[in-house]
Image (tube, rainbow, N blue to C red; front, side):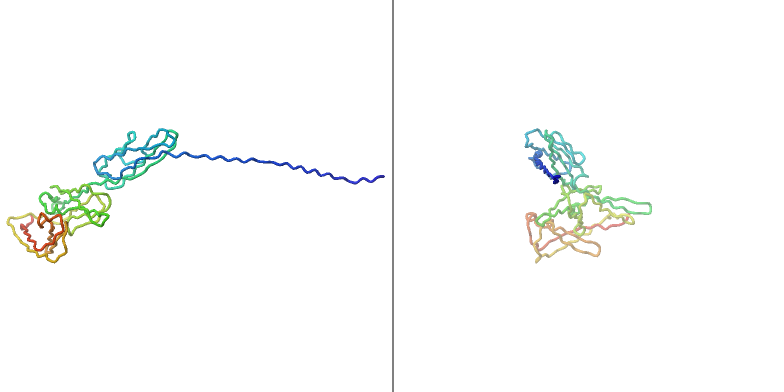
Length: 282
């Protein structure tokens, strides 16, 4: 009997699979391009306008929307109009505008406007008597010398101070217009100067007793001042004389020759005459 040899057949099946990988790139078209730059300067009570312009690289029409703005600001077509109020002056007011192309692409332009504004001062003293309080406003119209001393001194980039003056009223109020935002020196008098950013300032005092009033009679005092050897004096420089009762301050340009007031001057002799009435209580 013939012996049978086992036979093993191995079939190897190789299947090649080729997976084709493809890639695609989607480019988002740029949004509208703003072609105008907004102004950042404004003034209290004066209309601020900004006419917006932008173009779409795709050539479609562009529309605008005012998304952030202070109260009172409006957008009509492509023009923003806003008149800063007292409360909005001397602080940063934020704006934001979106430009939308007809295809849906959007761009945003943002900025801030810090309007110059009026600083409001008040000087009303309160006298506390047995019968109750009595308010007495400082009459700036009758105290021209004191009114001339008040100023806002605004620091400049070159280290100098820009002097801004205002005017006062009989009711004790005093205003200094066109003061830019930020900190400044508020000078009420040479010995009363304050570093502040406020737009309001109350200089009134509380006093125990009754106010004084002038009586008859005038006392004249003449000062002959030798100022030779001093450094050159400039506008807004002061002389100060301390007495046993109060500070007597004198602004030198007020006493300098009129033709030389705008320039540096070297004083040699200043003659000052003051008048004072005796005072007594009510």
